[in-house]
Each structure stands twice: as structure tokens, then as C-alpha cells.
Amino acid sequence: MFTCLNTPRVSLDYALEAQGLELKSNEKDIVRWSATNPRHPRNWSPLRKAYDITIIILLEFYTYLLAQGIGSVIFPPYSECFGRKRLYVGSTVIYSVFCAVIGASSHPAAAAVGRTITGFLSAVPSVVIAGSIEDMFSTRERIWLTLPYMAVADFGIASGPVMSTYITAAWGWEWVFYVSAIVTGILAIFLCLIRESRPTLILEREVAQLRKATGNESLEALNPDRVLDLDTFLRNVVFRPAQLLFSEPIIMAVSIVCGVSSGIIYLFTDVLPPVYASFGLSTTTASLPFLAIGFGFIPNVLTRFLEYRMANKRVARNEPVLPEHKLTGYVIAAPVLMGALWWFAWTIPPAVHIHWFVSVVPLFFIGFAINEFGIVLVGYMADSYLSFSASAFAALCLVRCLLAASFPLFTGRMFDALGPNVGVSVLAVVATVFCAIAPMLRMFGERLRKKSKFASYSLKVHNENTAEKTES
Image: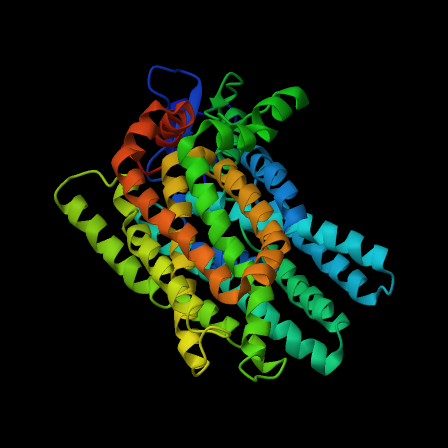
């Protein structure tokens, strides 16, 4: 840290060098990061990055849907303008309190209000984390970072019914919420130790110190996130996720794919228990096949190695690593999901009567494919929209929440009318369509990004505000 900040009128060049900053080309008063500044989140120590991102990822165990969809529109743009840390800490503390309130309340209305508030707050880790990952990690590093994020998120969904079944049987339903309150309360304490990671916000603080050191009040931080008034914030920032969703074909396609795949997991929370009860399993044991979906993240490690190796080969040949070059996992996962759903559909009663384990195996591959969709497509959006990644992910999360919340409502009747075999076959047909989207993104994604004003502008802003320069 610059040690002479309290000394007035030091040389601007000296102060810039001491703080690891530089002036924007052809601008005498606009300050930006230098590539080697250790206070830029991309240049933090591996231990600092590991601590911050691990604590943030663990929050993904505790999320809800419809209210989360509302929160997903508000929180990401707020975090882009005013920072991430205060959202993580504040939302987790309030979430913990209301989980305890739900457990202690005996009135349905109180429980409904508590669930709405906790669902709203659970949008913070679900959508803001994409921005935190983009803040701290380079393009190649993000290949790996989305793996634990999506693995924790999907394992939380898959293991939730199992844990709640056993907790309820042992101690009562109240303890489902008490356990959530205890764990998130502990996480809130650890969150107090993370750092703010939004580069533009940190740069504002650095430039404030620079003005004090040099006496040059005309210096300004290069900050495209600066919001002048509430009207500007509402018009240009809060509505940005909806604008991205309906104006960007990439975001619309990715949101639908991720939304439907997430909806399948939530649908299975209703479908799997009666299916495995028909095999003769007890109520608690019938929930255990969910774990096969949760452990599906294991093969995702192999596809990360494949993508990382392919990226390194391009770098070795001095070729740019474009977002479309990292869609390999999706190309693999799409036919895997299709095949696994067909497999599951016709290895369960009433059409087929064989050992229950035969139908558990495809659940493992379904988990792999759904994880892969999230890992690859979330990373693809982060690489495509860079500075707007949190808002892009907010659009995805809104669609995902709406579809995941509605799937168990209307598909329940579909399964009652068609039966489990045909009902899952309908999902397999939808998954077949996903196989066509993957090559389309690889062929036309770059062209769509170059035509997008958001993707083009975010690339420009990213290259001006980060230590890593990215190709279009």
C-alpha cells in the first residue's frame, strides 16, 4: 500500500506508480488499474481467493425459488454498482434469523412470510456469485471455478430431500429450519472476513486516496458502474437483466436450457419417492436415489481437464480462447442427458419390473449432464458478458426459478395422466432438442456476441478495468 498518502502534493506519476494505477490512454484525469496491481481481485493470493470463494459457494446449499426469482433481478445490478460483500453478509444474517423464526412459528402465515423472505435473500449467492467469480478469476481459471459452484448448488438440491426426510423423522420438521439457521449463522461469521471484490468499487477507493495524496481533485476512477441518481439506477441497472433476457439470443437460449434442466431436478423431488416406493422401499429409503443425482458432479472433473487442456493448446499456439471454445462439455452433456432420461423412463414401474438399482444408474448421468449444463453455460455467459455477467446470470436465474417452481405444479398432473414411463419420456424428447442448441451456439455464438451492444461494451470495459486482456 502507498505509504505517503497523508503527505500532500506528491507527484502524480509517483503516486500512480506507488498505488499500482495508471492513467487511461489519451485521458489525463481518468485512472484505471495497472496489470500487476496486487489489490485487483484477479491478483489476490490463491489463499485469499480460495477462502472467499469457498465461503460464498457454501451459501448455495440454502436456496428457494419464486421469491429467489424476484431477488435475482434486484441483487446483481446492486452488487455491480455498490459491491458484493455487504450483500453476502447482510443477506446471510437475515436469512439465518428468519429460518429460526419459521422453525419457532406454529402459524402457516408466519411460515409463508418467512419462506418468502428467505427465498428472496437466497438469490444473493445464487446470482451474485457469478460476478464474484468473474471479479477474481481469469478466463482459464473460470473453467474450474464453476465446477464447485454448480456441484454444491445441484448437490444441495439433490441432498435436501434426503436430509429433510431423516431430520423430520428424527426430530420434527422444525429442525429442518433450525439446522439451516445454525449453519447459515456460522457462515455469516466467516463471510465477515471476505474482501470486497468488485474492481470498480475498489478502484474508486484507490483514486480517493490518490486525490488526497496529490491534491488533484480532477482525478476520477474509470468506473462504468457509477450511478448518478436513483432514476438512472432503476432505468439502466435494475431493468438490465430483463433487457438482456429479451434482447440477447444467447442469454435467452442459455436461460431456457438451464431453466428446464433445473426444473427436471425439482420435478424429481416429487417423482422419485413414489417411483421407488413402488419398488418396495420405505419412505426414508425411497429418498436415497436423489444422492445419485448429487454425486453426478464427479465426471464433471474429467470434462474440466479436457477443456483446460484444449484451452492450453490454443494458448500455446498463440490463438485466442473464445467463449465458444469452452462449450465442449455442453456438447457432450446434451446427448448424455437425452440418453439417461430415456434409460430411466423405461427401467421403472409400471411398464418394467427389474431391480431398482438399474434405474438409479441413469440418475447419476442425469446429475452429470445437468451439472455440466450449469458449469459450461454459466461460464459461457460470464465470458461473453464479462462486466455484465451478474446481470446476465440474473436473467438466467429468473427463468430458472420460474421454470423450476412451475415444473412440479403442472408436470404432476402430466405424470398422473400419462404415468411415469411416458411422463419421463416427454422430458427425454425435450432433452433431445437440447442436442441441437449446442452446435448452434458453437457456430453462431461469436457472430451474435459481436452484434450485441452489451457483449461488445462489456469487453471494452473489461479490458480497461482488469489485469487480463480478453479477445473478442
